[in-house]
Image 1 (cartoon, rainbow, N blue to C red):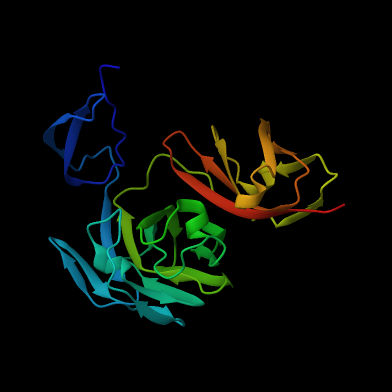
Image 2: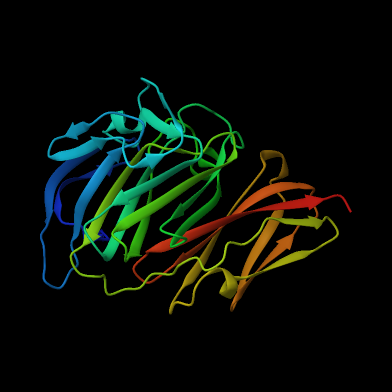
Length: 297
């Protein structure tokens, strides 16, 4: 149309936005402007507490400081010198801590926090090579059976997952990475505290849905959403299915029906990964993943 709408996260700071107009022959012109988000008494401000460069040394990018890896238990380190896409902070994603790892991070007292988990795949190149689980602050954010290549595409790219609106009461944030296939891994952890709790209460994962195995004669699978996600007004469920390349027809249709989600199965034998995402009105979301295997009947 005639306008472009930017959705803002509420984080204060300054950024540069470039607008590009491109014609059919890919000739283009650009114009740039600066956007500054200032603190407001009515908008909760997310204030940095600590940024940890997992598996690596301290790093500084302008006014942004990352401390060397600390507050961890378990795991080993690995690094590469390759360029990383989707970021200008390549050094964060070139070092990792891998294996079964726990972080026990001290924070500035009780309150509402957000944790950004910086991830990448810098070793494997194919889906299924690495799968792991993440649990932040005793189940307030959970990602199970996470396969970065399968979920986000090619390796050597920066990925950031936010665990938002974490209710911390003991002055510590606990993060657990658990290996499923090969090794779990983490590249950086950024912790922020809200000056005041956000007005919106986002959905949470109440119960992780178990992996499913069904015979090829079964025509549908019913998933009870109200058992997986905690009750939240206005929650929308988006479904992302990523079957094996050779079993693209594993799931042919999805349908939302009140408190449950019904998958129509095609009868094709194979294994796929399904990600369920609960999203609220402000586009804050949580995700949980399970594996669906269709076996020969």
